[in-house]
Image (cartoon, rainbow, N blue to C red; front, side, top):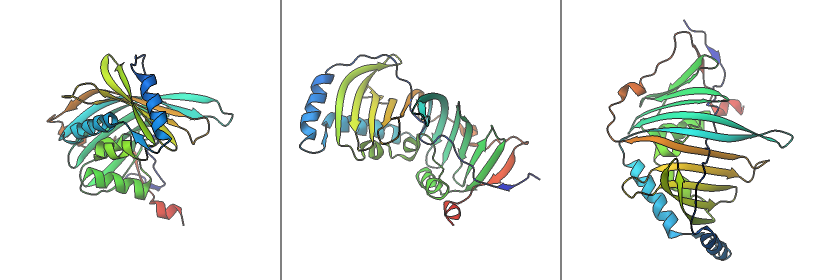
Length: 269
């Protein structure tokens, strides 16, 4: 019988989801930014093209019954002296609506595997050889929301899984600008820029109305010491029927110890 220890198991990748950005060219930038700066003085301004492209990308991914993608991630760790260390990570993700999800995250700060099967969520920490499970809601969106609220468990790219990408990308925008066309990993993309009270976002969406996939995200955290940056590049997208049920079967090594999640309200006692 596995030894149980009651301690909190964290998916230690919260806020660590931004990617490297390759060389790219841009067109019409100065004009677009100048227009935005002029408009923002009169209140929030979002270029209609930004809204259209964001919504198009969101709908395209949301309507797929099953998706897979790979992500390459870079994020800053700000030291007490103000210096920044950049960490790298990679991620394989699968989703089958409405109730299957798998994430394999591996990076400089460790690796985690995450399963959701419509009934429970299981997290495996390979570095510490432990795992934990708890009952989950019947849909991906509800399960992720409950995991965050009760256990402070945040899954990378959660908005892509839950179908909330558009609302989250457009939330609290003070102004949004269409920068122009640029290449990400050799793929021509629409480059969008937006400003929020505490973060600045850049998003690259494939410039193909028949395949408007998210290709890159860069976030700058303006309210944090040292202004850390997070970036992510998305590749190997597959949308549609993938027949990958094996991805969602929990596979824990026999040598791993089972531990328990601690509900947030217990930590606040």
